Length: 366
Ligand code: FE2
Image (cartoon, rainbow, N blue to C red; front, side, top):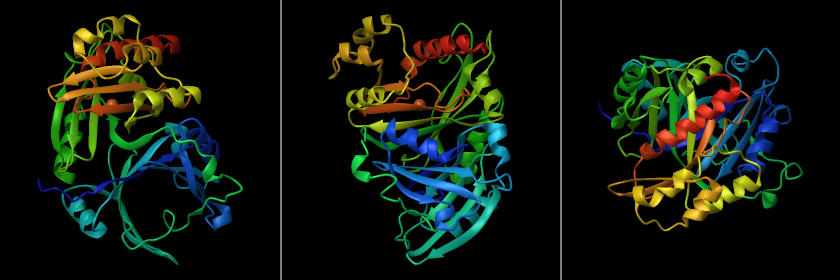
């Protein structure tokens, strides 16, 4: 199927219980700058919104201001999570109409929103569960983010006091879907958005003593947008994917991988900001050189910070995973630095999933 022309991920929209406090977390722990706000003070009556930026990454945090908000039930069902992945496109109407013609479920028809700084266009379709994709175009828009948003009040957040940790771009975003549904969503991305399959992992690649999962990585024509899709596979105990599906109340975004040019610096700063990361046993580092060969980083330093390494034919990559960022064991983040490799960390799956299972055991959800 022909590609729908997608330029990049424009932003990720989270629906959360308390956007003001989430903004504080992503600012002070993850190093984002808070650049824009929407809410009662900007004549938006039904929700509050904060726009956060670091490198090329834009997050939007929304909270409802009353139970009349059309999405307010989402908080009870899902807790905090990703509601929308917005894709920058050259022509919103054309993309939306083509996607719907190919079978996508429309959520919001094309709209041109205007304010004194220009025209912002948007239209949305439904993906897995309650997650949507919004096609947006801001070519004719000069405002801080979108109509309704105003630059953040400098008395509330001073840009000069933001402390970026070096997060630069979104590398990939992973969805968890129900058992038996992975191929359906692989087909959906292929048919509706013209994505192709980059790689697949089966339960032989991704299994531990207790649990297993399967995964296929879908990417757009330019390879710039990558969406791996996971489903649980049968194991002895409850897999991390099943745990997610139970606590999120259905399919949704499991993790967002954020790229950095210097993972040691980034993780050091995030740890200093109190971000909790998963740890693998120290023995992981004993055999690291045998597995990945010589690397530029100091292995002692990687071990101290808990950073993992994997390689493929084209090079190596470094990665680390946070613990879930809310109370429900749902959304978490990955920090990744690629040194040539296009890997998703297959060589780390076993050590990593055993680390997740230790956390599950503490939660009583294994
Ligand atoms: Fe990942």
